Every structure is written in structure tokens, then in C-alpha cells.
Length: 397
Image (cartoon, rainbow, N blue to C red; front, top):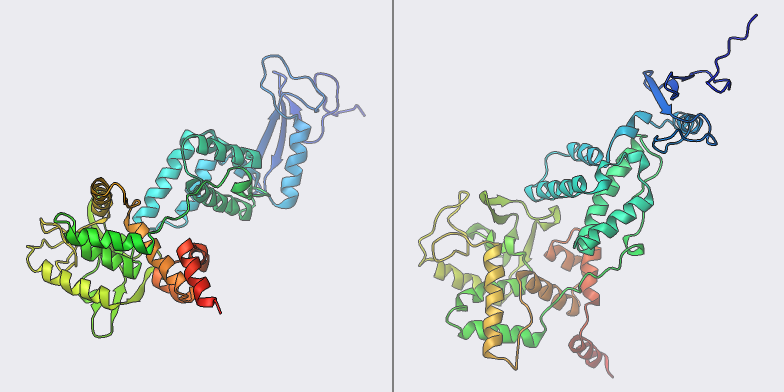
């Protein structure tokens, strides 16, 4: 019987499923895990074969077959090799469509970054740890902060874990520590010391322009509220009888207008005890509010804080106000300047003060609305020479 084995143009015997086209290209036909016919292509049969002139570098057919057999043995879906990083991230987001607007905006921004970077168009099976590390380095060169890069890395790591669980890839290329690649240059959270707090309060008490913001500053310094939570406070959130402020929503404003949403995290729903100074500031603000003709927004006209025009206040107002306040103070008192003041710094100041006063971490975590205790514990290491001296004096025999 004649030998019917197929050979290539060089007379080499081809294996089952292998063939060679008239243009010299090698083909391997196989069935994927779903029973569908698929094909592998290469201009070389073996790794030692020379690459035809003007052809792009590629793995040999036999190398591709070997990888394929390994994929099939491990249950890896080889059809997933065509999925790009952008498509993978989009697929993950589609599994959790009902998210807050801020999360939606963040997703869109990361997708935009991926589309503009070469990583986004890469097939997920070709992405290596080195590719991911180089992406992080490019992000840094493009001006993104360490914390932002780390947040985006965490999102992409979750996407690739989904690919691992779906048997599209074996390993997660984003499973590395970012500080092995980039220096963590995150600035330490700034706070105001006791002297600076007193200086700030004294200034707003006596300044005609900024006196109207005194109550907001006092409440922020004595509750640790986020600015959006402060802006969202309404009459029904204040319980003078039991001495609590209920936090169960926040007021935000963007190009689409005002919106009332749940707090930043589930842990943000909480009740904050009112100190006497807080109670007094709220009562005083309620008296001031009587003089303002208020506009109803998102079904409410009983917010605690309003602008002169009767619109509820929102975060950006305080960003510019506090910045201008500090500029005015420092221009008047050049030898006794204040550091930058933001609503977030006032929140950090409150948290650090409570930590230094030995409030238990769990209680402080609850009051701050932190999602995890690690964030809260960071404030217990936010020491200063003043807090160190105070504690040493109390421990001295």
C-alpha cells in the first residue's frame, strides 16, 4: 500500500491536523472545549525553521500546538485569547451594572486610560507581569499619583482574577506589589494642631467675610463628617433629645445638578454623638437659616446650610472658601501663617485628635464611617511633638 502520509514543501511528515497552504503557511485544525473547529497558523513548522522574508516574527506551529494542548488539558478556554484588556474590563463591569455615579465615572475614566495605552489593546493571554509593571511606570510618567495608580491596578487585578476563574488564563499578571515598581510618594495626611485650630477659629470669629462659615468649621472639627455629609444634613437628621446626628445620605452637585445619595460606603451610615460645642453651632445655624429664603432641592428645603441665594451648599464651595480664607489670614498675619485648610483636613484633624485622646479604634472607625479598620489605625500613628509630650507627661512618675 502506498504511503499516504502528508508532507510539507520540505518533505517533512505532518502530524494529524497539520497542513500547509500553497503560500507556505502552516495550519493546525483542532476542536476547542466547546467542540467548535478552530485553527492555528504560523509561517514556521518548527522553532528552528527560518522565518520567510518580510514575514512578522511568530511562534512556530509546533510551539503553538504544544501551548494549545496544555490549555486544553488544564481546561483553559483558548477562545479567550482574543479578548483584549479593554474587553475584559468591560466584561467585569457588566457583571455589576448597578453602581453609584462616582463609580461609574471612575470606570469610564479608567477605560479611557486603557484605550489610550497599548496595554488596553493587548490580548489578555499575552499580558505579562512586566507589561503591567511598565504600564504602572507609564502612568507615573503621565502624572498620575501613586494612590491613583494603585486604585486602578486593584481594579485591573480583579478583572484578571475573573479571567483566571473563567479559565481564560492561568496566572494574574497584576498580582504584584506596586511599591516594588514605584516609590510610594503619597503625602502624609495633613492635620491642624491645637494652636492652629484656635488660630483658625479666632480668625473666622472676627472676620466679617468668613464669620458666616464658623459653624461649618466647628461642626467639621467636632464630628469628622465628610463635606458632602455635612451639606446633606437636614432637620430630621438632628436629634437634640438623644444627642445624635444621623448620617444616612450625602448631598452632591455636578453638571447635572444636585443629587442626594447614600454615604460613600455602607459603613458611612452611622450616628455621631453631638458635643456641646456641636449642638450650639447647629442651633445657631438653624437661627441663621431662618433669615434665608430657601429653594427646595431634591425634595428638601430644610438643609442646614444654604448660600445667600437660598441654594444648598456643596463641596466645591468650601474648597474655594477655605483656600481664600487661609490666603487672607496669611496676608494679614505674615509672621503667624496658617497651613492649608480643607474640609478633608478638618476631618483628619478630628480623627487624629480622637485617636490621641485614646478613643478605641472600633468606636473611631464607626464614627468616621471607615470601611476597614486599617484606615482608622493609621491615625493612631499620626503623632506630633505636642501629642508625644502630652502622653509622656501623663505617664511620667
